[in-house]
Image 1 (cartoon, protein in one colour):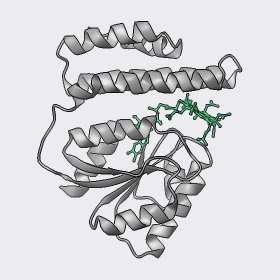
Image 2 (cartoon, rainbow, N blue to C red; image 1 turned 180 degrees about the vertical axis):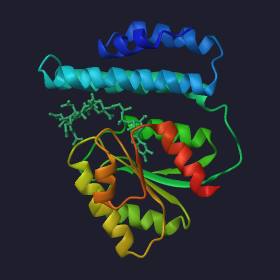
Image 3 (cartoon, rainbow, N blue to C red; image 1 turned 180 degrees about the horizontal axis):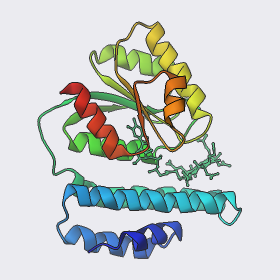
Length: 210
Ligand code: B12
């Protein structure tokens, strides 16, 4: 049994060896997809510890970079478990981290989980200009648009992007995700839905294509 608290603490402490040992053991135990999602949530909680220590001045940018690599490595280990889902194409999701924001770990988790659920994902990467979202949405008629961002300023970029999408006359469902996203910011941005949890995001998208 994976000790989720131990995993969270090990991520927070940047104990790479402990994290890898815990996850390797976990993957060997043949876990279910919901169990893998719990493991991801535990890693995400560990990243919150890293963020707090960075704010307190105990961790530095180098530690953030290392934490980012550690989480990417962890998700890669868990990917085969996440991939056990459906195979039929459920729909297309165009995703990207909005303009000015270079964080992509959360976006990549949402991408992996969406693909596991049968969605085709067009990933525009990081620091994505509103025009690129617009152009790609036009090329993928009927797609869902997913925007990611963890910086406070990402909310403004999301708003700008939603405005560009609406001005272009694109009628697509829009979901925003990332740590600073709230009900209030979702309303301000003009998106249809928001979440700080990738698994919930996938469920929302499934509801839209059902
Ligand atoms: C790792 C990290 C980095 C790495 C990023 C590596 C990478 N490839 O992403 C690096 C080192 C590059 C970095 C850089 C910086 N960072 Co940084 N970083 C972090 C850290 C520690 C973790 C972020 C993270 O990955 N969290 C884990 C993921 C899994 O969580 P998540 O993004 O919320 O995603 C989940 C959900 O929200 C959801 N989701 C996410 N996106 C989407 C999208 C959709 C559509 C859906 C449905 C769901 C969804 O799914 C995920 C899984 O459930 C945070 C601290 C924190 N507490 O968040 C700081 C943090 C975000 N960084 C911060 C800062 C200040 C910076 C820098 C400015 C530092 C500097 N001085 O240079 C730069 C900014 C560069 C830029 N322009 O973007 C601040 C932001 C402050 C603010 N309020 O704006 C934070 C909060 C740290 C802090 N406490 O001060 N950072």
